Amino acid sequence: MTDHRRRLEWATFVRSLLDGRYRDAEKVVLVMDQLNTHSAASLYEAFAPAEARRLADRLEIHHTPKHGS
Image (cartoon, rainbow, N blue to C red; front, side):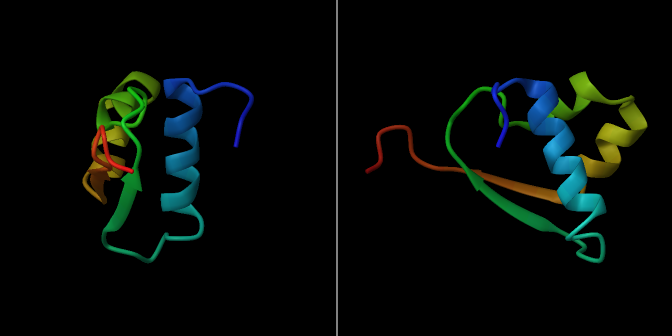
C-alpha cells in the first residue's frame, strides 16, 4: 500500500475508504493483523478529535490472533 507502515499512512487510507468507496456504509468491518498502527488511536494522532471520532464510530476493528496461522 505505501512504502512505510506509519500511523499517518494507515489513518489516511482508512479515511479514504470511509469517505470514498464505503461512504454510504453505516459501519465498516476491518480485519487486520496485530501491527501497532492498526488501531483507532492512529486516527486520533492523525486528525482533529472530531474527525477521528467520526471515522472511528464507523469502524468495527477485528484483529487476527497473534499466534494464528
